[in-house]
Picture 1 (cartoon, rainbow, N blue to C red):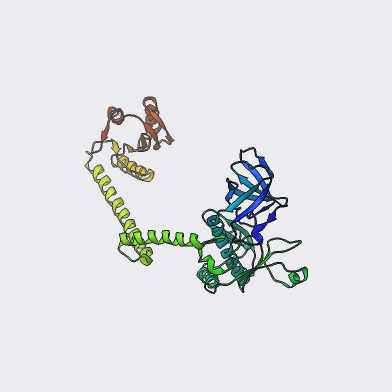
Picture 2: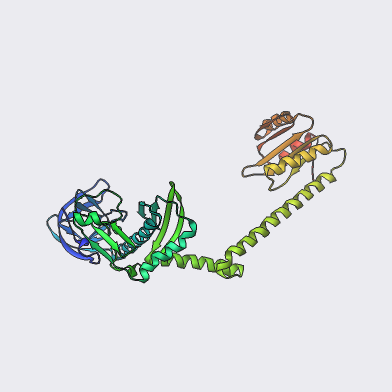
Length: 389
Ligand SMILES: [Zn+2]
């Protein structure tokens, strides 16, 4: 059983201990156990510590059967005394975020009479899952209330109450606990059974920022950032908003309005372009001589709907046939409309000459066509089609 030094003092980073075992794992890393350690093992949603042990880089720490296993990239000799040092930057970030999560969860669970049913500390953000629907309009209030604990520098006190005391105590816990229970009390904000590492005073958390809230499995998933992570996030978001504001010549708190305006203008322009496009199509058909029965139209950037409408209009003019082609990723997309009800027959001939896929009915066929543009035009001209200019 490893002596858990991190429970004596979560701020201690250096220690000396004796190597109890060292085994090489299948993946080539080394599983090292010590008589005592300051390395916190992954648990309760908090990732395991990193650091250095006897010169060996420790990249993760886990607990198994009361033994704490340090995952190292090299071996250590069993029976030797080695110095260990926990990566403080990594640990303190986790302490800030874990402690902030306690405060926010405590406030939420009290207000909505719900439970925290999931907690994950990821590389990018922390998520907490709550079995209650949290109204979107409450988010700022919750955030402010959680930050009040920081402004008041509320202390986070660790106690191990007796069985009797525990029965009197109202505390949050994800599971039924047996044996000695470790309670983390954050003033009026939270009381929770937890085995993780926390800051002593809420002021050290710096800031609690909710960055997302969404419906999740009938409840709510909240995404938050604390400490330096919150600061870095706000710096990044502020920088992006300032840049957008500068480009739109509005203050950053009005970029939403400015973007809506641009979207409206863009939608109008799209409509305008569509209108002009159709006018040019009509003009093209209008210019065709009256005796032309079969028309070939080649246009860039047509949608499937555009092609069908255009082919229909062109075929209608002289009750003939119209082939509309538009370049696509490989070759052309086409729609062939025939008032003579022989579209499939023309398509069959196309398939003999070109790599062509498509189908339809007597009045219209659509598909994809691969081949040299000049040869395609020649194919249709030989069939009496006139290329619309
Ligand atoms: Zn905790």
